[in-house]
Every structure is written in C-alpha cells, then in structure tokens.
Length: 253
View 1 (cartoon, rainbow, N blue to C red):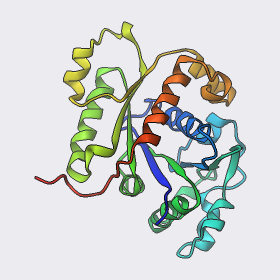
View 2 (spheres, rainbow, N blue to C red):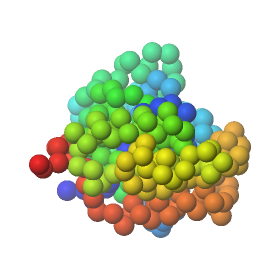
View 3 (cartoon, rainbow, N blue to C red):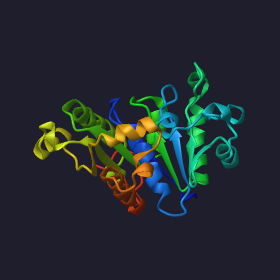
View 4 (cartoon, one colour):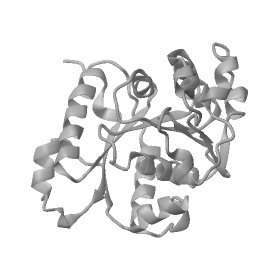
C-alpha cells in the first residue's frame, strides 16, 4: 500500500481563495524536505493553478486520455508541469470543450495512481458538488475546507459541513478561514455561531497576496517570512503530523 497522502481542498463558494490556499499549501509541503508533492487542478473548466503559478500549460489531464483504463504512475508523472524541485503540477485543460472529453472513470483512476508516485497530492477542486469533487473527497486522506470571514461564505461552509458529516468521518478534516480580518465586524463568537466547528487556521488578510497572484508567484515563494506564509507553513506542519484518514462512511452512531 502506498504511503502517499491525498489532500483535497474544497470551498462551497467561488472567491474564497481556495486555489491560493491549495497552491501555497503545496509549496509549503514541498519545502519540508525531500518529499515529492503533486498539485492537481481538478477544476477542469475554469482551473487557475497555471495562472496563479505563472506556468505555461504544455500538458494537461487531456493527455492521459489514450491511457484511460490502464494509466500507470510513470505515465501520470509524464503529464506533469514542474513548478520547482519537488513540486509538480497536473494542470487543467485549456482548450474549449476539452473538459467535457475527460470521463469520470479517468478521475477515479488518476488519484490512486498519483498516490503511488508522490508523497503528497494536493487536489484543487471547483466550488460545486460534482462527480469529480466527490471522487476527490472520497480519495482524500485529509479534507481542507476554505471560507472567508464574511457571513455568506461562513454560512455556506456550515452547509457544506452538514453534507460532509453525512458522508465522511470528520476526524481528518481542517477548516481554513482565508482573508481573516478583525475589521470585518465579525467577532470570534459570531464566527463560532455561524460555523459551529473548530477553525484550524486563519490566514490574515493582506494586499500582498493578490499582488503575488498577479506576479504568478505564490507568497510562500516570494515572501517566505510573510505572516500568511508563516501561517500556511504551520498548517502544513499540522497536516504532516496528522495520521487521520477520510473514509466515505457516516460516523458510527
């Protein structure tokens, strides 16, 4: 059995900074030593991993279609676009209609193959409960749920948790509040009332983060000592120390 771990990053609402969290988390995990990390852009229609990392997509998941049903670890690694030593990226398709060509069976096949090839597989997902997202949540050894510190986002986070609690064991799950801002007029008590679950990490709101996105350089790369970078690295340390597993089974009554 492979020792690789799949970390699925999900947000119920667009604009939560989910891809920013996923990309910086992948960077932080790859910086912890000799670990091999893969970042998968599973937002097949509107994926932004290549844009955020400043990569030019030469290959994507579409290039795995000839091997569907018999995909190997070596073939999967050949689909990667390297970002930096120890961090490879499997990018979303870029051509019109390419996403529609990818069968769900290929997604189901891909994730276990990547687990065999990498120590950590970080999966960035679209903000919707579709079949690909459920496959990524099913395969996950850890689920990372992202929201911002506004009421609508936190409300949607709570609804997401209600759904996931019916399907998965919550012991291998983390909640990230992105762009946390004390000036947002939401007290800690307000957040607790809206979410009703422990917050694993709060990433502070800094204008440096959008600037890093526009440069195509994750803040954990360009400014490793930045407060956001430090918070992401601390979160990565927590994930590495965790041995929890997600399984698609409701918790025992």
